Amino acid sequence: MSYKTILAILDTADNCAAVADFAFAIAAENNAHVIGLHAETISVVPLVAPMEIPDPVAVQALQDMAHAETVEVERIVRLKAEAAGVSFEWRSFSSSAGYGSAPLIESARSSDLLIASQADPAKPSDSHVDVDTFLLDSGRPVLMIPFVIRQPKPIKRVLIAWNGSKEAARATFDAMPFLKAADAVEVFSVDPVENTPQSAAVAGADIAATLARHGVNVTLATATTTDKNIPAVIENRLSDSSIDLLVMGAYTHSRLWQMIFGGTTKTLLHSMTAMTLLSR
Image (cartoon, rainbow, N blue to C red):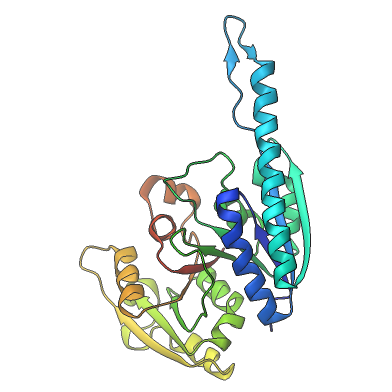
């Protein structure tokens, strides 16, 4: 198994170069085709009092800004595609729905792997992709690149955050090309007695055995929390083990639950320090 169609979500001129570099590097390793996807999104239009109608001058200015960013993103990525020498195509859509529009989701559903960048909080933009839309609606795995990592690097050490859920299982198998190529893969369970019907001693043993049959160099590890702060335990493990890629299921609880109470997915997406492959 390998990735043959990679969708690079190119949201802003600041992010697109890094996303393209990662997409082309993975494509070269898998002899894959890359689709560059960009949504030309217009910001919220200011209203003019007293009739509260859109200001036509402002509308035109916002349209011009959005189109100018599209042109710049395409220019940057096409240059990188030529330098990389990989199979590439460009897709751009204009829509008030942004990355949630039907044509973009359809493109995602036909891809093996989606790649996007975490937004840099120091550079806010209305064009940033809402990765939740792709996770919940595309049915495809999303590889998130932290904004602190701008250059591709080999994925040698992988951590699978295993809680026995269907989302974790899907993410694990979606990540198989990375797992088989890695030097070391760890199946890591936090508070496993609560999350699975297995005992702590054998949590993750079945999935580890399956991965081993695929030729993956896999080990098992568990941890317990005192304050139920699972994201902190995972983050510490990523740092202590010099992990290149985190693999985890997204939104094991419903999105509404995550919005109200928080959760592992939401927390790690905001504070991620390693590349993260998520599946829902």
